[in-house]
Length: 500
Image (cartoon, rainbow, N blue to C red):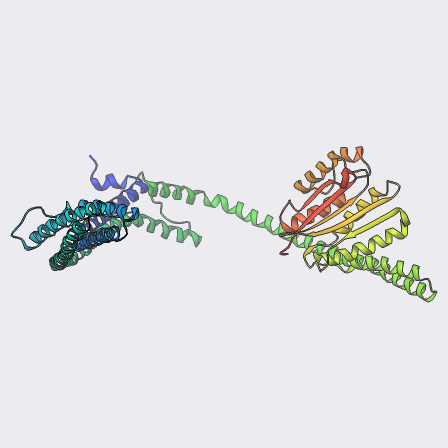
């Protein structure tokens, strides 16, 4: 038969820990329940100390309300006063039933009996006064009301004396309850410390039985960390988690030498990968340098346009000079605008440059209109957001005899709404669904079958605009595509939050 010590050692760590915690919880629960029970008894006694005085004060107020309602009825004979009287009288009768009905040698109880009898007399004469007032018998009314007032005044004085007697009695009871509370608090502290000490010793012995073998494992692990594998095996035969760890540790020490070669091989492989990573970083830096060098070509084009504008000015070709300046401003915006966001006002300036260039190209075939309220629009949006939408509307609006494009801005409570619409053939429903699907999935081109059906829509520019709005504001409800006014053409809608 196993001894209790061996029985506990063969139990799992979880069982030992949970048993120890359960014992500690039971002890603390017993301490708390005992303390709460003692405190409750003491506080109940203390709370009841002045309850009788509070009840007597309430009784006094109800008596006063009854007398006030009776006086109002005698003087004014109103329905409200008689209604108040009967309500107050009912409360007085209910409270009077709780008072002493028989005389007693105890001073306080006998005083309650006197108050009870005076209350009965007050209610009796009050009823007679009501009856006399209803019969309009002035002589009887004066007589009965005088008796009622006398009873009321004497009743109030007796209630005050009773209240004083109860106050003295309750003060003595309060002192006694206060002493009980002090005793209860002392006992609660003693019980708490007693149970805390018992819980501490239970936890201490349980943790010690768990930590002793763990200390041995820690020392062996420390030697293994110093690459000392010539260590004795544990050979522990217990069936708990510590025994399992010791047996696993023995097997690990036996097989660890076999893994050393594998670890060194892995280290060599990682070193080779690191060298390749450094080489790729060098290639990436070279690519960045080439990208910076390629920016020279757009700057050369921009400078060339400025030179052409100066020549046109010297030759008095004002229209040509202005046209080249607008083209140069358009290129300047694209070359110099390296930041991710710009204001709506800056984007509108780019649109004006672009539309001027398009009007020079298409002449009277293009009718571009703006409806923009007064004031500035400093809200930040991704650069090159409006120009691709305007370009799309011009492209599809010019398929008619005369292309019409309208850019409208409206201020709303939470958004600045920008709409751009044309009078073209409108956008196919399949293409619109494919556009939003591409934005949702993060792709930058429409499916091949959509492009085959409608080669005039490649969708790249629109997807690029919507994707950048989605990435900028982390929302998908800021852009939409609907039919134009009167069901003709296409309408692009962009909503920019006011707080950006």
